[in-house]
Length: 317
Image (cartoon, rainbow, N blue to C red; front, side, top):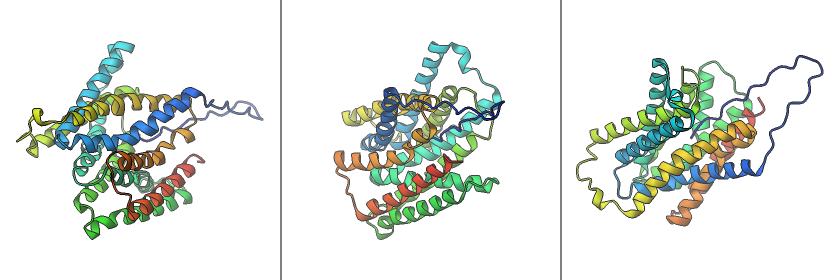
């Protein structure tokens, strides 16, 4: 889950202004978009497989520390060590955002997926844009009527998705954990644009992943996840999913997304927000045989419709 960066438009010095050049939708753009759609959508499946035999917070911490260090090493190799230089304020800000996104946001999702299906987790996470709209409103912004209607749809879908937990068919605690995760992820995403972050988004991501990963490890130790944990008992299936999340989920997909922000129309790039949950549900059903119940289908459809409305409203403003 990430928040698309806003595109800037400069005023033309003459009137009438020439039309702004359109960003070409090339084959490379579609390839990068496919990576973001499929890989980010599949991370929920990967998490579900990892926690089959790995402790949730310790595995999440190991994943993010590993990915963050790998990204930092790649940046230093390609652009020189100076690319990692940041001010103290930027380091603190990146660490705070990393803790909110990864310990609170992703970490709670990992914990929740020990008791709820991956598809349900992905659809609950899809409500994040609705929380961001409410946060923007609380800070004096007015996103527009369409965005508020999208929020109402998202919350209605969230209520439908919660029904299996209220009826006892799904572990309610897992549902509550994911809802808490969406609030923390939204807060971290919203805060990142309002505090002094590193100028290079890859540098910021590296520090966020390392800080968030360390935070996850500390939470895992505080929960006592190390007791009884035995690496010899971790399945090859979980190790494969773990490696997939590090390399594809945390490195390749993020790089593809950052490239899309520079090379593709923002309105096209932002479609990941409502494609990822659909991909996650389909993969969960096909690979893990997760049930497609009526609350999942109906609630998921309502949530995705709300996110579509929010995204379409935002790209017109």
